[in-house]
Length: 448
Ligand code: SAH
Ligand code: SF4
Image (cartoon, rainbow, N blue to C red; front, side):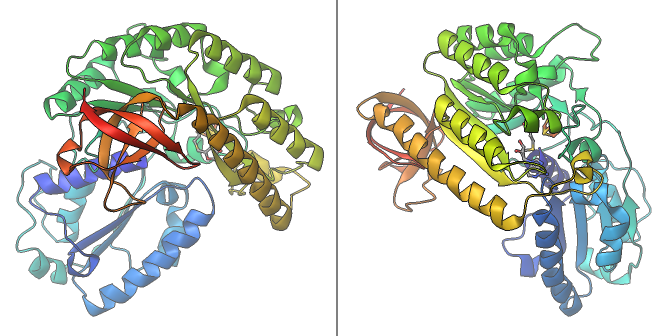
């Protein structure tokens, strides 16, 4: 979601006459758009800002801005830590960026009309200015039809619902992103149609809990219905979505996933813990048995589904037995992959009031064990793919191997292969020749 918001900010600036600098040192404006899902983010942001402060001392005209979740949660603290910031913009204000820059530059034309050429002569104006702008409001809707400068050239992010009403006891999101708000199906379909005209073959529908899509909208619609509508869009080949909350994954949605040809056979279904006691303290709204049942049901209806998940270890009160329960369930289910985290206490969340904190050493050791177990499982899940011909959407030069390309299967597995760059963005068929933990290797290159 954060990346999508950054794409909007870049799009707004481009429409206002700015262009992307190749390096930070030559930029007139530097923005950090922060995500604040774990405490570590804060240290990273302040350390980066320390670096940028030095750059600003050398170059007084430089405009520094901080946006996103960290600012939304702690505006005062942010300004105390980094008083030299020229502006801060919360998650409900980020789209006011061009107007804010005009204010900073002492240009009082107001409005926020796109296409206003304010960037030049930028530095001259910037040296004169001294205003610090602070915009951190709550609950404002993000306008539709904002320009975007998409970073991803293959799969485009499309938010369908913003915010979250679930209040899991460890999580910042409800506080920094506000209440759930679904976009209208009309706006979503229009955005995706536009993307297909630009050549995008895949969309990734975004939401903290896509399964609650539609609540509060005038027209009666749920996420399964939305998938049906998106599936009809001509020129689109693949639909992915993230994240599904287990407590809201309906039978209708599972059935629809199986029926709709463009919906990929991959489900990211965060489990967080395998212990019922911890799940209840996390306020997740399901038990390990219910989760397991759900996974079995999906397997029955979509046998080739690949499952990924999120797991937190070291949650307050997590005993060795609770952790063993998580390990057992992870082995029983056999996830294709997992994002694993040490619990990070976040001020203002319910879990910080819980007693029996788990020490960092114990959490780290549990994380290490969990990763080791999961890596073995991922490898076992990948091995049977050897010899199969799989459809791959080519995403670009491989991050691991600069002379090769990489793409993704419908099951969301990365495949590395030798091929020409003109295949980037194409759907091809590859025969899988090797299976590793992080990626598969393939050959062939039949364009589909
Ligand atoms: N909406 C998604 C999760 C979004 S946050 C869902 O409900 O599944 C992404 C992941 O970050 C979470 O699934 C969780 O595993 C992790 N996470 C969130 N808050 C955390 C915290 N305080 N400490 C450690 N991990 C956390
Ligand atoms: Fe956070 Fe829970 Fe909402 Fe996910 S569902 S964003 S973990 S509160």
